[in-house]
Length: 112
Image (cartoon, rainbow, N blue to C red; front, side):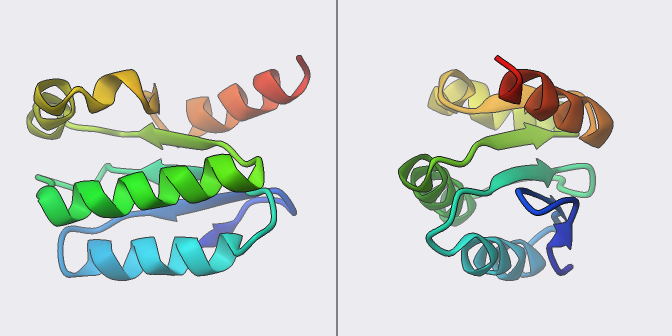
């Protein structure tokens, strides 16, 4: 799924399970480039994540921080949430219930 440009500074990606996940994450990295971009990753269609997916998430997070953008993950199911908890990643990512709430979170934080 290509990255959906929400605004000039916000992109939304509705991720799919592997192998689509890897392609989606690569598209996000390319869309952001070296400019600040706030990204919402919608996990609604994701049923599990593996170590490769985690690596890609961490790479996108690093790119986001380096360029001054923000990253919000949303729509995470119970099984996937368990992976985030066990690995401790729940402490380094920002989470939201759904895309609408994630976009609102980015809007509120940008006004601070």
